[in-house]
Length: 285
Image 1 (spheres, rainbow, N blue to C red):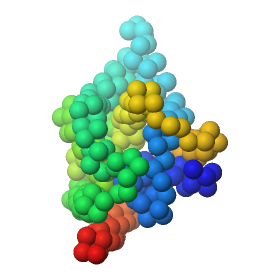
Image 2: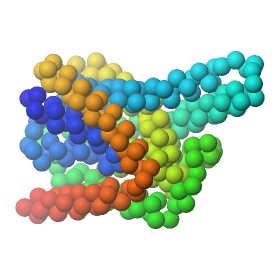
Image 3: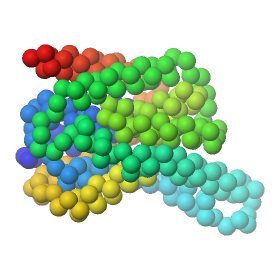
Image 4: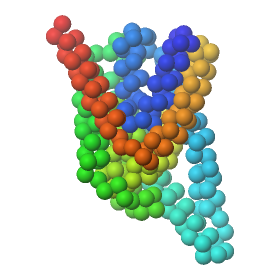
């Protein structure tokens, strides 16, 4: 792997992990279209650790506030007790909302990976056709969330029911083309959350899942003894994924304060149509 390929794939991971357009799909599509070889499990681990670093760096203050508020002394003013209660509540929401995705990852990751992406083998048209369908389907659901939701509720208005539903939506993101941020933001919108609140909870909810996915891939790497790409390419991929992911989180949250997700809907539909046409052409050929 060349440093240029590492930069491109690092950018793809950092941007598409947080924009609702599916990072797992793009990490399959981009090498497929460019004819690049499979980067390997070591590089995949580096990319996941890069986006985890972006999440921790951007939301460091939020996590400190959540943990300090949760474990603060029970003694004190009523206002301090209220902050402690809210911190405990949100932390429990994040933990409970992560359970469906964690279970889905442990039980289904290997089977889904085998169907969509077999190492050292070219991608096949049928899996690409499935990705195309998932890209378009989630785009339509995201459009419905924008069109019919109220966009009035804040993070403080979350309930246990909301958390479970958003967690179940996150579990669907194991399928390339669904998008973890796309599924959770869409679920939040359909439940009436404001766009920025839905995105913020999506990113907080992502931290345990991204950390768990990185740890699982690291354990797979140790167990399988996969060959490693050049150290320079791995380091470049990690740094680019971390930097681009951090900037993506920052500007996406600002963007969603003032604008809709329609641009992502259009992108998903256009990419889904392009992949469908290309995959069908390869099947007919």
